[in-house]
Each structure stands twice: as structure tokens, then as C-alpha cells.
Amino acid sequence: MEDKNLKKYIFIILGSLFLILGIIGIFLPVLPTTPFLLLTSFFYLKSSKKLHNWLINHKVFGEYIYNYITYKGVKKKDKIKSLILLYLTLSISFYLVDIIHVRIFLILVAIGVTIHILKLKTL
Image (cartoon, helix red, strand yellow):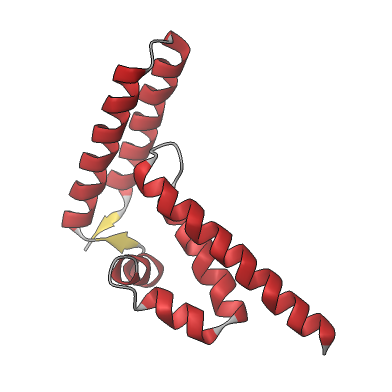
């Protein structure tokens, strides 16, 4: 019985850690939000029905996660918002950092994330 409780608490901690990273990823384009939120969903599902329901019904993340898991896609408006936020934050980073290697990395991140977002099925 102890092992189940320990596993449950470890999964809750991991889910919460990935949730924090996912939230940070909303504002930092080099951190991918979606994989972290999907990991949060997985760990909460395996450990706490209450936390999983909270996540799935969350006014910001809920619909996004549900659509991604259920339909493997996102709404057009979410794609547009994601790309706007991506390029806004990358532009700020590009402006603030005067190191050519970092700027090249930021451009590569922009290209990679843009391709990923555009390849997702549009709902």
C-alpha cells in the first residue's frame, strides 16, 4: 500500500513540475508548452482524478489539451495566437541578444516551432 501512495505523490509532483514548465513555455519560445502539458495530463491522470479533471476543465488549458489529445489538432485561432506569441517573444529575445550563435538558434527555433504548429490538424 505504501508503494502506491509514494507513486501517486511522485506522479503528482512530476505533473505539477511539467505544468510549471508548460506555463513558462507559454512565455519562453524555446520551451515547448504542449509536450509539458500533455505530460502533466498523463501524470495527473495516473495519480489524481481531481487534478486531471481540474486540468481538462481549466479555462486556459482545458480545451487546448482536450483537442490535442482527442483530435490531434488545434483550433485555427490557437494556431494564430501561438505564432503571434512565438514571434513576439523571439523578436524581443533577438533584439536583446547580440550574439550571432544565439540569434541563429532563435531563428531555428522559430522555423521548427512554426512547422510543427502548421502541421497540426486545424479544427
